[in-house]
Length: 139
Image (cartoon, rainbow, N blue to C red; front, side, top):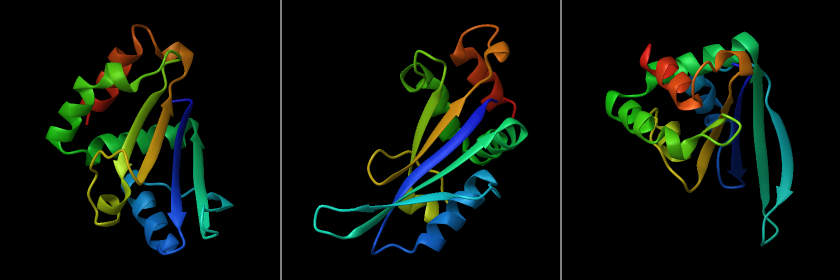
């Protein structure tokens, strides 16, 4: 993999450490996180957190994700690959942040942990969907 990027928002009422621990556990991430402080509509503090992995670290994070997805979720992801892969071959997945804190990987659109996976160009011998199918099914 070329890269594996995770981004999410932490609101003032949330425990940033608990969320970071859940994200690290879900994807086996040990790399440092970048954090940017933003201001919400009502003046509350919101942190935008990002971790960007490359090379072997990115591959290991994708393997960890594939290993931890339940069979039904993996099947759903494989069925939806056409909707989740962009024109550059990047895969986008959103997980429910609150479920992740509880130790479960559940797809979710609102208040989510966003994952973007970019493959190296030489890995794509066929379609991006075919590459991701092979990577996700090997676990």
